[in-house]
Image (cartoon, rainbow, N blue to C red; front, top):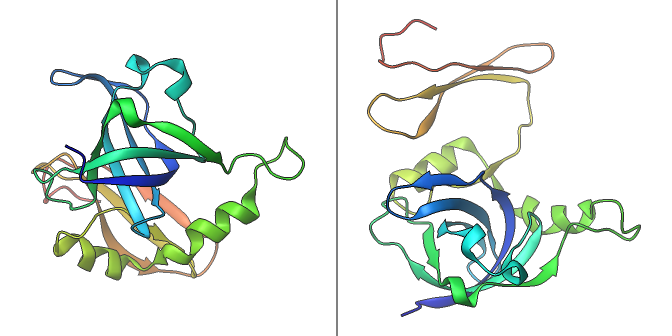
Length: 177
């Protein structure tokens, strides 16, 4: 039974992945206009949907959503596949061949936050998805933790010059950077 009906501006759509439990799925993230925050929609069996229900990034979809309590991140919802429909699109601007960046920015940028605020939000199980606007040159490291499948940002060292982003994976916390 659906918990709520949501309108979500799709900002991220993963590549289809095989799943033992759900067959082939995609994970979608986007801005839920009704909740006023980013949400994760999972699982979506996109290729099993009728073509008329397929959607792209920067389209607004409407669906009956059920909060996925088993996911401790707090921002995951499972859509009812039969209820998914496209209701708007943010991907065509006035020239029809160019992205509608002013409209996209007006919807998404007010949700920009800091890494500290997002970490606090994640620590309190109120969500793990966010948008961070980088205002200074910074260097960060991305680690794949051996204790789980999630990526973590480690460090926040600042330096002069153009920003560098170094991505590293490690299997233990003792691996040298």
